[in-house]
Image 1: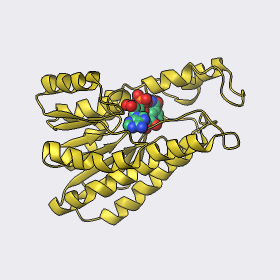
Image 2 (image 1 turned 120 degrees about the horizontal axis):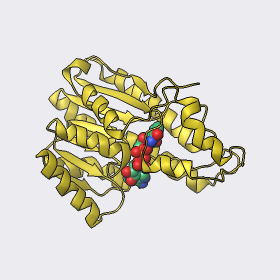
Image 3 (image 1 turned 60 degrees about the vertical axis):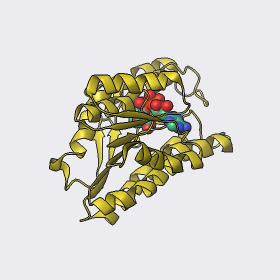
Image 4 (image 1 turned 90 degrees about the horizontal axis):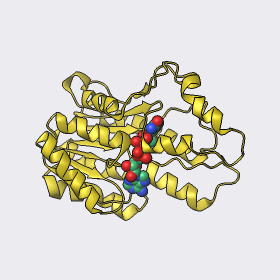
Amino acid sequence: MAVVTGSTSGIGLGIACKLAAGGADLVINGPGDTSANEALCREIAKVYGVRVAFGAADLSNTDEANKLIGYSTDAMGRVDILVNNAGMQPADSAHISAAQQWDATIAVNLTAVWLTIRAVLPQMLERGWGRIINVAPMCRADAENKSAAQASKYGVIGLTKDVALDLVGRGVTCNVICPGWVPSPHVKTISSDAKPPNGRRPKARRRTAVGELQLSYELKAPDHLGSLAAFFCSDAAAQVNGVALPVDGGWFR
Ligand code: NAD
């Protein structure tokens, strides 16, 4: 049974569907508790023949992040796979950002990752099997004006390494998938952002960033990353632990 955070769209939805295709029951998550999310659960359940529930946690809220694993365990009986995919990357820069935006970004991108890992580990360790997969980009040449997002995502890579070392030999692994550009609602927002805070990057340059930086010139679909998540859950990956794996077609760093 798998919990995938931020899975009502984009990469998270692609990962959730691939895990469901492999037979995993799911708790999908996003902010809000809308009928659209319930309809999405019914659709995934119908297509893949698995049980699907919606965990309505706003991960910027510590209480809600704390409760997501408990809710999922109550709904499905257990949690074997945790995918921390939810994320936000507001445009900001270290010297002009508002503290409120910094706190919200750190809360969703980093603190919620720690809280869900902390909540799920006891049951995984008790059963001697578990897979934790985090999603965080590597620090990149195109990542200016994202101080909170960069700081938090690098925190995720450090946290992953620490958790992985702690888990050695106990049947539970913790790894990071580091996507390059993946077509998702989030990327559409970035590419249509004509006015970054310091004005140094014109819109046209943003639009060509994929070709300039992701050297394969290929955008992989969210379900491609889902296949990688499924690999991390397979027996073949039982000894893959503490890895931050770039999936970016050969990035120009
Ligand atoms: P997306 O905007 O489609 O997905 C982000 C998800 O996080 C959404 O489902 C959103 O609802 C969820 N989310 C945001 N705030 C939340 C909150 N407070 N509580 C619960 N859920 C929340 O974007 P995406 O591109 O699919 O991004 C998924 C992950 O991949 C993010 O962590 C992002 O940083 C990372 N990433 C994406 C790319 C890319 O090119 N798309 C590249 C590198 C890393």
